[in-house]
Length: 271
Image (tube, rainbow, N blue to C red):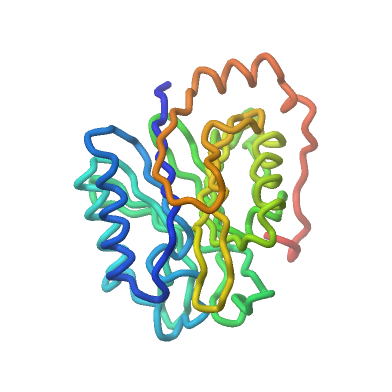
């Protein structure tokens, strides 16, 4: 198994201005210089901020400037680049995480849990499928912001005869500063209970609604201990390495998964 070099990009966002945000991110990614990475993670709705103006801001996958930019960056930097954007498809609007590979292929995950306190459930459609991608031997479960509060949706659900369904959890967010404590605790809790690293990327700054964002982007290991945890409120781009060998060794040394509760959901409930 290979190591996974993971780059977190925490930044302020220009409100509902995809072109400006892509230029901003171009500049930030330039700070990587010749540093190699396997995965670059951007915040939720990185091209617009957390807008509820889905009818005005969403674009189709084929026409999305942000999706085209992701693909271009993935090809240029020879790594996966991911973040979520507002997408319209078949008359429905989605907060869609796009996983752009350097070969031009895309994998998408539509946010399952829509933040009703901001009316997101009235402006976007919920996703229905959990999505796991593979990179450098790591199976990675994708999630977006509010999903982090729902452990059943993110719980390891291995197939019979398997011990683990995934090896890392990724969550992109626009998580407000007044609730920064739950964000930090939940990232660590999801890591501990699922025996896997968690990659959490949030924005900083203030949006057009006056909402403040503290960032607190973190990369935590399988014990919930921080590998990346910069002072909150700052813009940064930082890379750390996840070791699959260390993950396997810990899972063998501390096999809490052997005592996990197995469950299914009743028809018509949850999933």
